[in-house]
Image 1 (cartoon, rainbow, N blue to C red):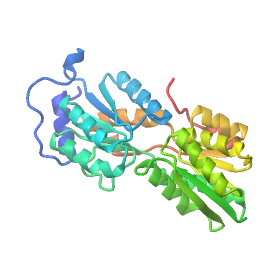
Image 2: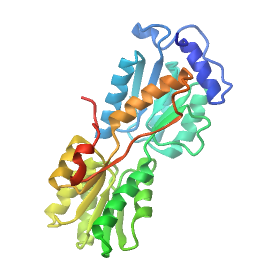
Image 3: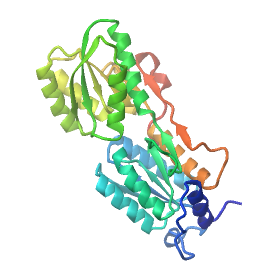
Length: 320
């Protein structure tokens, strides 16, 4: 028999080293929805509204339903202040655990402290903190490795020739910094980064960045773009400028992204399934609350470098 909601929280609180008391009273956040009093209530704080975040939400929602957990969700819209406010709202709902796709790693310190003081553990998606002692667990995407895989493809394709590389980053902080850092650190000496600007995970912004980039660097050879939605906009800008030969490497592994790799529109993408991240986050959160010894605190999400040669190896990205 699984622990009740109250014992789940008490267990999780001891696991993350907090002495905070469980919120008083016998009620749970589930009662308003008519859920059973011993079912787990989860709060999911999402970071933005990109295709990745939409698929992540869908996966978390479907998995929570399958696990008979009550789910409350909120979106921080790439704002750290909104993220903290969302976490405070989830605490007020008396959830048993928080699943957080952060907008910025720097924001997590305040988020974790706020949840810890309320005795509510946090499970992270995509990124881990340097100190995991106060975190319940993480479904981790090795974003540095993602960048390294794309850089490795460029190294192989350039075959020792001197080449120029442009970077269209995402929003500063969290995912983008890790992606770009891994990419730049793994580029060979013959690959020179001649431009690096943020596209803010916004296709319209990325297109503007790409238009300026190709005007300033008409002999660009490659571009690394921090997600596929921006990559399509960058491709459009390059093609319009007559730079169809610029090869684009990117991140996500969406259905459209895989199709673009197959057609040659994109040269490579690193697949890290949003569906897998969401499923892992919900299942592992519940397992860790229940002190299931078979659940790892840090779960690494599989990565696949997808090129024309292995498109069939790409995992499903988004739930149906």
